[in-house]
Image (tube, rainbow, N blue to C red):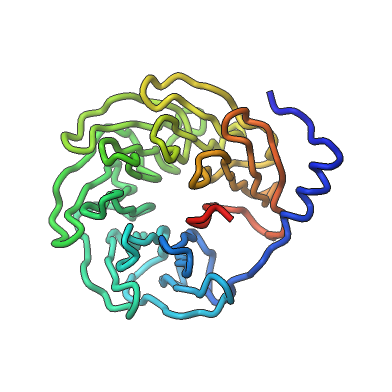
Length: 298
């Protein structure tokens, strides 16, 4: 159950929800935003008509680099664990790896038969997992670009894919083409590609200790927390007034941030142990597609 906020906590929530920076420079929708591991930079991905990723100073909001080379919108952009590289996933059907300091393109990962929604590094930085409209996720060698594994089992496009903190599992979610009531999250063995369990949701992320998974749902405007080993549903985060596009844990695992779509346009912060809503981040004029914590959790 989500408890109402006290007056003092509500006042605190208003103070904490003030935006520190607005990053302006893309020519289209911004699909993705992620911090560098040291928290000094942010990388964003611009949609169709922009087709770039941009790197920004996280303190000042100054644009530092533009990564140009994709032929369609950049749906996903993320740093490698050591902060030396950036991987982008595009609806042009490829992922690209870039030097995070110079912006030089280093690798192109090509092999999907549809546009890419997501690209992410494994925690050890040795592999990259991509999610595609072709109904599969693929695992690649992050140094050579060699395709290592294909995860097949979704009956529609794969919306997102990411690793568990121990590198042992991958969680994927079905994409936009599946029926609203039948969005499926799948958990896989990261080495063999064996499907281990199925949950429900549109977006999924592991807790830092790997013991829980949080999923975000479009069709019922909620997020859910699950036991990562058994697949048991633990509780539901209820409070958004629109589709929930994104959910992620804070680095210490104590909080969850969710981002909501049209009709809501906010992010919310929740207690990760109880599901209590703590405060709301309001200020966007459109859907919040992506929400993530800085590495220091601040």
